[in-house]
Length: 190
Image (cartoon, rainbow, N blue to C red):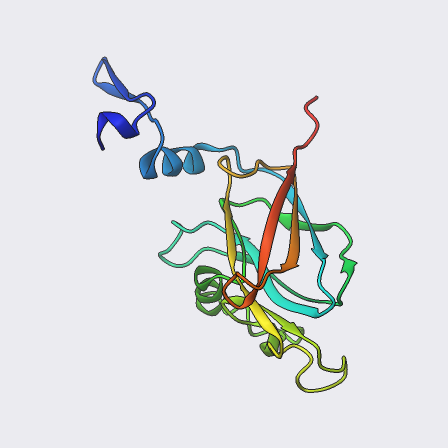
């Protein structure tokens, strides 16, 4: 870490203990993420601003809880074009992801994919967009494109009790022709 990339770094030694003030960069992000209060839930809303059905997996987990892999609040959704989901409650954990490799692997590691409600066609490391008929076997396949996954971090991008709003947008310049926009509605402070 160089002085240029730090906002504030300091250490104070008191009676054999170390207190560290962390700035920006990877260490600062990790410190913020690991020290954020983790109690309660968050809510998510998905807004499909495209004319195509979006199919995807999403959930929350603690990325550093690896041995054995900690639990994942794993969910899946098929969202018709030009519609929005209801507000969905998700357990507040350190990571919240939509269609990422890390979420995909955590779902496999914790056997979250072994339920009757599991949708194998919506299980991927990206969001699928389809123009196929709702009842067809291509309904959740990426017939018109994909969006790269998105991951957010507790205490960096959101706090427990906040509402996270994801909007799917058609974008010819994006890899896969679609992107995910993110907005945060902070919880009201008491």
